[in-house]
Image (cartoon, rainbow, N blue to C red; front, side, top):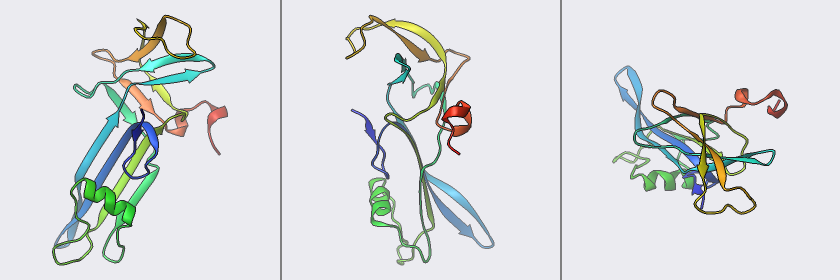
Length: 169
């Protein structure tokens, strides 16, 4: 089963989220990161009928991922958090207002790799024997994209990495 992205509720195989709060001290302010989360699962890539498995590890992290942040939300002094944003904040035990009732200045960003989305992945290709058959895949071996000690996987949905015929204008 695919993952479900926290805010957009879209089915995906990978998501990154970041929740930040603006902290003001006198004349200066800074953004404090409250939550930074990445979740993923192994997934298949298909191109012209050929398939490859992308295998990633969280610990130690063996990949670099650059995703378009396609869901952004914020709240602030005169900007209440939407009910949907409020639900995400609650899931991470974050209050959108201070104990005096004033709105906190919060930012949320979410980037995902949706099921069926066009992406670019670079890694070391290896052949693996399948322990279980894959529907509509008649072969007993499949290519996997993995990392090695000095070579991390690179995963991105940034449009600049696509061939020219796949880029949106």
